[in-house]
Image 1: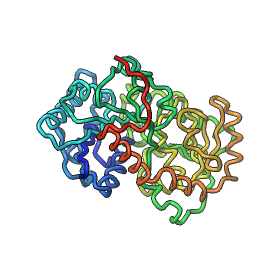
Image 2: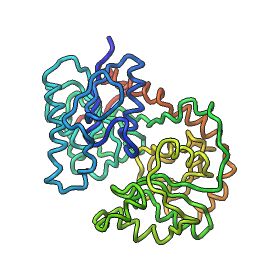
Image 3: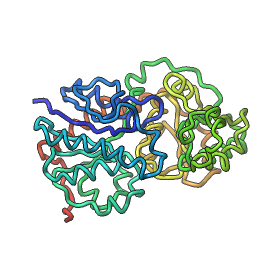
Image 4: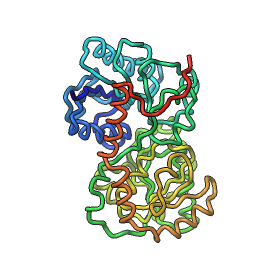
Length: 387
């Protein structure tokens, strides 16, 4: 019999998202593959989500992402209302075999608090596990509750109590990797690109400074806080209340001259794909241990090599011939890699992405984890339990 899985995407963005939305993009990539394989999907999301599912449940019709910047006492009820709706659904029916949760901290808080008054749970860890160490370090021995990471490195840095519940990791996927080798490859241009939300951890200040120093043509794409482009940012007199805006103005903007280094704001769809696929390389001078690397995977699927620091998941994702990595903080070595990147073959990048990061590969891995969770046939020995 085909399993029924409730996937909790949270109340923040639609599935698929319009523009930014890493987790929601991954869920939108996974769901069609699951349904093709006979999995019945109930999606907990917002009412404006457009992806085809067997059932949808929601509290809010519109995405609630804009409220995340509001004071805690104003926004805390959003997540609580969404999770309350899920709990009511789980208590009122017996046909749900598994909950696949993607909601940071609050998802496992509610689901573990339900005890055994719920189906089995697989909770995917998409984020930096060190930022909620007090929560994850005290994570108890919860029955029929499992987690998976999005890279091996992420799980190695997880608190031991959380790793007790781990079934391993599943690499993220992108629809761009589907038949990637069959697409016509556009001619490469002279620019480098960095596509990411503007944030110190993504290293835009390093890329912009080095571009000016070494004469690179660099295009920076991505939103700054809630501002999707230069015009939106310029129109807001109080934008400095956001830390990412202050970071941009103090550490990145002085190197952005509109010629050698440009910021074009958020890009998506065909525009984003063309920008990346025609670039010499995508830069990842990351200043944190990136857990999943969606943008790395997308770059490879578009036939563009990766150049960055050897941190987080990058060494796992960047196979030989698909990119070049320098030790963290070694800017001279990072600059030298830009000189060498043109020797890498874009066709090889696409082939590796197709083999490792296609949607069907991710879906097959998750179905394997679903089976382990539902049947209790855990494939690998798990560490000693913690009370």
